[in-house]
Image (cartoon, rainbow, N blue to C red; front, side, top):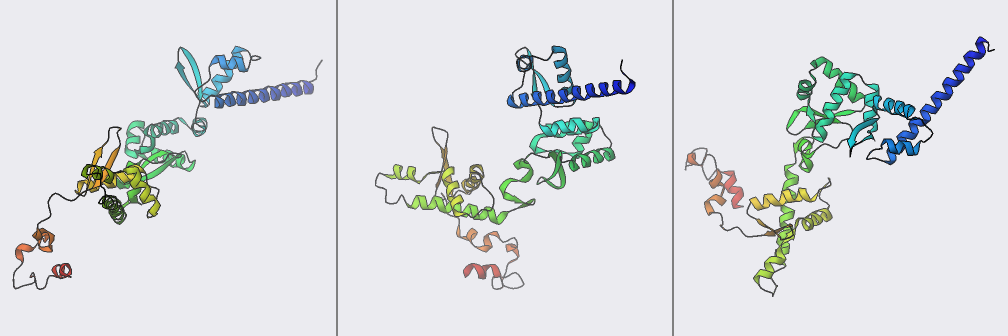
Length: 312
């Protein structure tokens, strides 16, 4: 016969053993799910843990589902359990219902982010309550606020581990929400210089004008390599970034582009079809007060600093 003390010790011992086994089993399930990112089925669990009864196994799985460690979905007529991102599991485990709702809304927005006004509309929460939830999620580093170039005074919210979309940051052409006009001009000039040099190299081509024209073409990857080798950019530029610069040269009439049969785009420096008239080339051609210009007064060619600089 057990005494009260012996009975309590036995119950406590069984509780510790049971809890230890449960924790070990939970970790084994999570490790199995990590080895199968696409999901695990009941067959996988049965094969991996044949010594566990189906009822007990279902209890473990349900507990992991309730704690937010797994996503449950159906594929090919069978249920699969897929391991969630660790940050999502932490949110689901340690957050209240309002935080879960706000987190899921921000998660759906992806790397383009979402305005606080839209979060409030979708969550139907009061602004003061929503601000507290957002601050809590930011403090826990589940989400982050990013300034958008579309509206510098507003912020968009996205998951903490996401890289903001180019539409939010402006890409390589923006620094702290300011457009880098000088940087774009330098890239514009260097891209055109590369195409001009390639065109100059075809002057001695003896295969004919068509062959010379084809040789003068360059792909965007070639231009990108040239700019990368120059080392004039502090930020890492992509081929798509250089294609944007090349397209501005096309719009200016300095470059033409063509599409090859395999889908590649090639660029070539060209001469403008029409030379600008002489009057437009002078400051008078674009002067906003040229109608007031005369021999006497403040607006006169003799006192015009722009004409003086242009003549020099």
